[in-house]
View 1: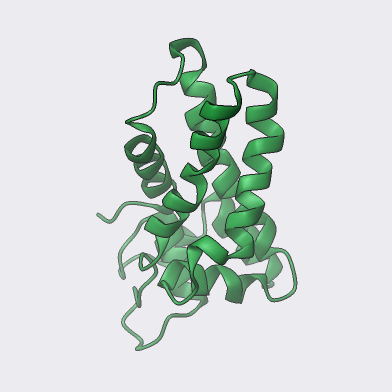
View 2: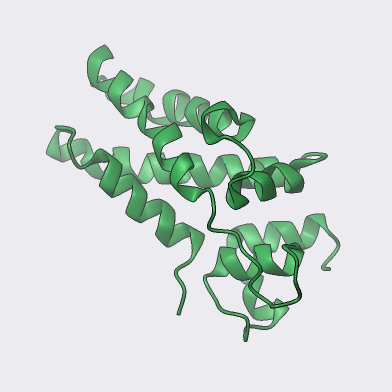
Length: 157
């Protein structure tokens, strides 16, 4: 079974943060906050006009993660909602904030033609978000948070 985007984000957050000395009592807050900020940026983006195309471009690797507005939003969410409340110091905050584009860059290329119809479309986004294979049905694939939002935005297509 393929892994979901949530699993990919969590894995990449841990891998990218592995070399940083984050205080033990704040490590879970930092790692979960980083993952939540990235997911939050994706979910907020899909609800905007043209957002689904932006997410598609990022997840297929056609958009540069470092210059993506989705990455910028994730960085803002992480800085404003997590880092400013932890008092970790400017140096560590800078290193942690730099993880956002690194993790976002690892998401490029995870979106592929999952349902075998020859193109990357809404169905493939749902399957990728849920972490399933081509055998998944649309209702199964859209069960996750982001899949549910996408389904609502697109009227359940």
